[in-house]
Length: 315
Image 1 (tube, one colour):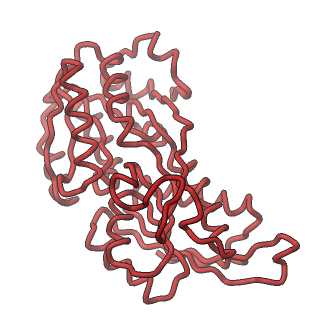
Image 2: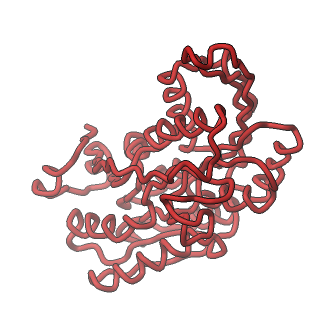
């Protein structure tokens, strides 16, 4: 998919320095497109008009990390910057590029993963937005337990070679043990394996599904939602629009908001600021979202004290 746009600044001091700025965007598809919508909105607020001031060259890897690495050919195509949506995408893009600035949207700690030196002083050629997806894994399990007091077996799929997903699973494993829950971890290495595992699920086999920080799995979020509803299984996500699309509950930061915040990084880098001089920002506006139509469909009653804490309720 290719969307073109030219990026220029429009402040009086820079009015004469118009440049067509080419931004390569690499993502896993699915719900991640909300981050691109947010990016466009953010650039518009910065008075940058798509089709006039900037070009986005979008590569959708559809959950395949090999395709992510191939998409890094954008460096040879001489884009000016890459916007990497998801932690696994960021790690792969960093590995296969040499010089391009990278603005990331990552769910896991970018310092622990070696993407940056520190939040305040990133160093190198990467900076961006951290959305706390991994850090909030235990909190999502806590909300699940409050929502479903009788739940015991919580299913999750992830690729263990994905460092972000493996860390999320570790956090979830430790937290579930403390809560009297069993986190049932099933490993999948590809979209095809995930689709097969979902197809093999039996009704009422699990009490709930917890989505971890795995870009490949997240790219198939709608299939997970549809399967869970058919099997009458509760779901806990990290992004509100997944609940709007039929998930039961979510707690976290919206992709749209993270993309919106990312716009200022692209604007600053396009005008000469180095990534190492732009601190990584943790987006901390967390939303708790419930879908009562889904709850009714799968036979779940959300306790009033839990529902009362919601930032958004879909009916």
